[in-house]
Length: 339
Ligand SMILES: [Zn+2]
Ligand SMILES: [Zn+2]
Ligand SMILES: [Zn+2]
Image (cartoon, rainbow, N blue to C red; front, side, top):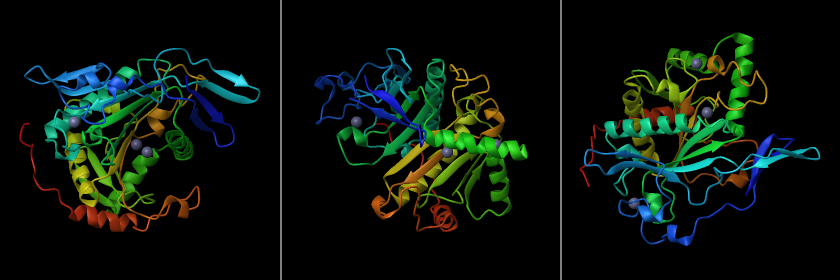
């Protein structure tokens, strides 16, 4: 089994060792394994959302070559001064539609809302496992590769540690809260609304804007306008999935006009039911932190090696990007015709 090693200087977790891989029968380079009728090319479903005709509309199954695996124990151990544990966790693929070659932005608002509900339900389900401290949901769209790359899907990782990027957000949100007794994200929202140069869109319950120090051209964030640290809890409220679907669809449509290749990630609170290292582990997170979605189009920009490590270079300011994204008014475009 692969293992997790902690770099004690940077506090970074590194997965090292071979990924387990299911037999080649699951790997067809020719046909898309995510299309209906090809279910035998993937591991069996963990979850299926069925349509009126009884066939699946959304399907979730384990990755055939997972970064983390579900069986076994963590076996936390020291090696002298170092820390390691087994790469225990879950790595799931969520196929969002039966239709090949259709992007999430092209779904109807109702279909996007259904995908969001499955995101919520998978996060809630994985957080029932107390071995997992974080559930990380992300989407990579439009990279060239096997045919399955053209079939709309997302990935879900449940991990025994909090990923470094999210941990940094928790840490600095907590630092801000301790000084000011206010949520840093709520303060950012208030300031952005006072001078809305970076706001792209506001709908009932959600706002999208280009963050002040955007790392990438046209980076776009979606935040709930009411304070909430938890995507999955917030999305339990009636009507919330439709509200989010509305702005998520239009945001993705805008970003797709910039580039068909994009990345999307949901940042939410850690698993507060997990086995904790200490009693006060992220104890104030529900006040400190504010869940959000980050979307970034992938553009042909300066190669990474030209930018010094630890910096980002973004030639387009957040204010300029917001002007462009606002002007890319998504047309009314409703549901695509059925397959
Ligand atoms: Zn397909
Ligand atoms: Zn907040
Ligand atoms: Zn974030």
